[in-house]
Length: 186
Image 1: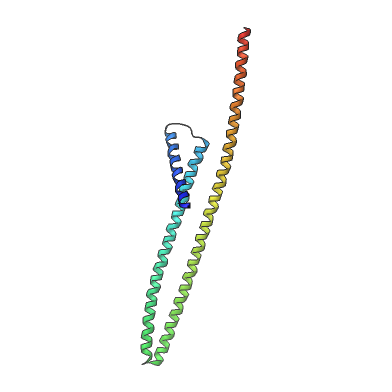
Image 2 (image 1 turned 180 degrees about the horizontal axis):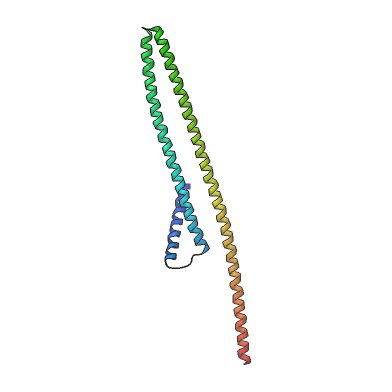
């Protein structure tokens, strides 16, 4: 549903911006709401760009994790081969094999530590992604609050303009009546 809303917002902002640009190219003045629409379109494009950049960074991290997993798999295969060779040697050289097994176990422990370290890094990246998403949500809420505030101000200004029109019309009628009285007296 949010994809549909995003698509609708994008389309509406694009069409409104194009209409406003045509109006400017015709030399007409912009209203406050038209300026607001241009600002919203610009902010929307910035947000979309930030989201795309974040997604690109996430894709890069995923690629790095896949490459690391491939390297770990390759190392695991290598370790498995070494363990098999070590087991074959156990039958013929018991004392030398004990030291080789110890070395192999040390390497496995080192790999496990590296895997744990990578898991911690992945968790850190996930936390960063959550933080970024939270910041995007906060920005969205702030923008919506600003939009609502501006809508109230525009409504208030519209009421003020309407009241001024009524007063101007009344003054105009009074002046016409005074002029008619002067003409009739003359």
